[in-house]
Structure formats: C-alpha cells, structure tokens
Length: 523
Image 1 (tube, rainbow, N blue to C red):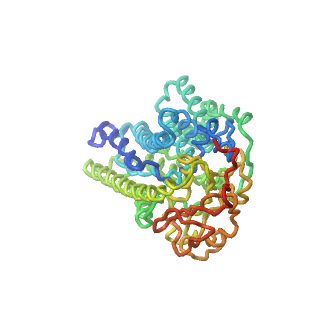
Image 2 (cartoon, helix red, strand yellow):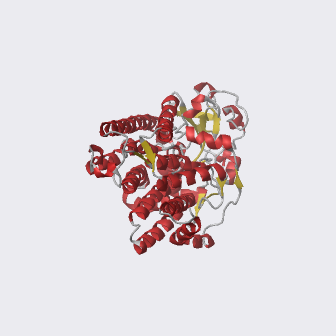
Image 3 (cartoon, rainbow, N blue to C red):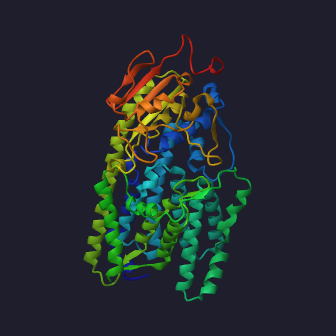
C-alpha cells in the first residue's frame, strides 16, 4: 500500500463511488427500448423463445429449440423475467444492469489493487458504454461485465484459496454460458494477473508459470461443456487484419458525434502517454498485464471465431479500461494535483454520460416515430423491411443507424414475420422457416440511404431491392430512414398506409382474399 492509500481524499468516499455506479444507468432510464443497434432483433428472438408455444403465428414462421450454447446470457435472464415483466421491460432491466455492473467492477478492481481508488480511475468509467455495447452485443457485454466482477473477486480473495476457487468455478460457468469470448477474456485476464503477481513476488519464470497454471485450473472447467454445446460454424477468418483491428482503438466511444467520440479517445491516449513519459504517474503491472494480454489477443486472433463476428476486436475497450485502472499517482504528484486529476476524470465521465444520455434520447424519439407504423399492421402478418444506410466509408456512417434492426419489434408487438433475424448455425437457437421469402428470409435488408452508389458490399438502391422481392410472400413493406423520393409509387401494387418524412408502411396488393399468412396459421 503506497502513500496514496495512506491518505484518504474526497474521491475515496464510498458514497461517491456508489453514486457514480448508479449514474452509469442514467442513459438507459428514459428509452422504453434501449437504442442499441442489434438489440431489437434480439428482442424478437426473446419474444419467440417465450411465446412460440402459445402462438400459431410464430409457429408458422419460426422454430425454436433450446440447447446448451455459449451465447445465452441475456436470453436466459429475459426468459426468466418475461412472465413477470414482459419482454420489453425485462430486456430493459437486464440491459441497464450491464453498464452499471461494468462501472462497479472497474472501481472495485482499482480500489482492490491500489489500496484506495486512484484519481485516474474515473477516466475508465465512460468505457462502460463502449462501441460493442452500443452495437447491441449484449450477451458479450454481459459476459465481460461478469468477467470484470470475477477478476475483482479473484484479487480480493487472494488469501482465501478454497473460496476463490469455488467463486472462480461459478463465475467461469456463468460467463461461458453468457458468451464464450467473455470466458476466454476471463482466462486471459486472470492468468496474466497471476503470472505478473508471482513474478513481482520474486519467483522464477518457471515457478511463476507453474503456480499460475495450478491456481487457474478452476477456470478451465467449462471446457467440459464443449461436449454438450450445440454444433456451429468453425470458420476462423480475419487473421492479422491490422487495419481493421487498429480502427477499434479509435472507435472506443463510437456513438453519434464523430468529433466528440474521437476526441474522447484522444483524451485517453494522452493520459496513457503521460503515464509513460512522466514520473508523476505509475503503472501497477499486475493490472497492466491483463490489459496487455487482451491487447495481444486483439491483435493476434482472427476477427471472426466460430461464427462470432468481431470476436477478438471487442476486447479493445476493456483492455484500455484495465490499462487506465492500472495507473496511480506516484509520490511525486502533490495532493492538490491528485485532486485536480480526479476532478478532470469526473468531468470527463460527466461529459460522456451527458452525451450518451442525449444520444440515446434522440434515438428513442426515432424509435417511437417509426414504431407508430405497427399500429397499422394486422397481427401475425409477413413484413418485408428495408433500412437505409450510408456507404461504409462515408463519415456520416460513424453514427451507425440505430434503426438497423428496429423492425424486430414487429415480432414482439405483432407476432409478425420480419426479415430481421440473425442466421448463424449453432450460434442461434432460432430457425426461420418461411421459404416463400426466398433470399429475404433472414436479413438482406439494407438499401442506400441517400441514393448513393457505393463500392464493394455497400447497400443497393431501393428499386433494385424491390424488384427482387417475392411480393406474394409478404403483406406489408416497411421502410426506415429511406428518402421519400425513392419510395415506390402509391399504386395498385403498394398502398401507402402510414408515413413520416423518412419512413413509410405500404400494404402489398394481393388477389382478393389472399394473404401471405396461410389460413392454417390463423388462430
């Protein structure tokens, strides 16, 4: 315990720490549906897994079979809470827990390692709302939040070996079931922490490695679950894609405003640089080691692992957070300057929290506007949807549209078919069986937002997409964030039912009495 730990400062107040933890939930309190990119599609799956046994509509379009797979964290929690709260409120409650638990774990880890909370720790808190979380990778984010809690408990229980081993077993199984990449991160973090601690205690490399492996064996027990998990994709790709991997460090805070988000990453870079070149800040290697291990995995492992896209690159914000948490002031930094550093860190957290709250509030307004279309949709019908997107290299694409999967709410509120569910063998327990939809059975829904012609795999024009739609398979056409001048004409094929400036719902013309939904599926 160093000089900082011996002197209690205002930022060591436990009440302040818990206030900060609860403040981490603020951005998600107002929106009825957390505006995370992929989440509405996941919510459609949550609804199906809970209600398919009672809905002939859902049975007509989908099939769901429970199996043990390492990607079930939020799914299981929402499933358990749905009978009491319903899917929408249950999802919101679980998602709010993720950044709150992440922030709590960060503060607890820093306090446990340094004796008292260093003033620099506040700079890590905004990373609870990191890019993977904002993309809606909620099972992964839940796994990482649990992994950080597990790391904290591992450090805290260093002198209670049996209890630590039991805790490690429980958390390792829970994290594996939540998301296997989170379990891999847990192993990397604790292995590297233990190795650094053993070396710091003066052991030889061989003795340190042997002790580390033995103590970490409880973390390996989830390997037995590999024999029972659902089979899936085994492809690995994206090895050594340095350009793509380095971009994720610039995108730590990627949300809505590119200038603010990049400047926020620069603030963190400056803090880390000052730590390296100035003597008034120092690094605790037992905590820097897990950060370096995650960075190494980020750079070396493939981008896609076993059907999980952006697998290893999701480590970036957590690696940076751990590196920040490893920093503390040295004896050379005067108390008044430590206080100033803590104040700057809190101001940075407040700024990012305010920006995130405002950003999600704006997205919530968008959600409410577009979801009004569902008031004009009959229960259990088939909907073809298209969402506008900028070209990949367009600076406007930084604000990754939160509307990408909003149409998934049609499943929750109307038990509809929608071309919005993910298709990943083994990674998902949901099967879509609506062959009449052709290539639109899963996905295939992005179109150019501004009529731009993009390179590579960029979105098509809306008229090109509509020409490929098997209209007999669908009852409605739902457009989101698509310019009005590209909409189909209100004619015999498409009847305009509802619209805003950037969205519309059309009823697709059928033969008299015909519907995409067969009579046998009607209750």
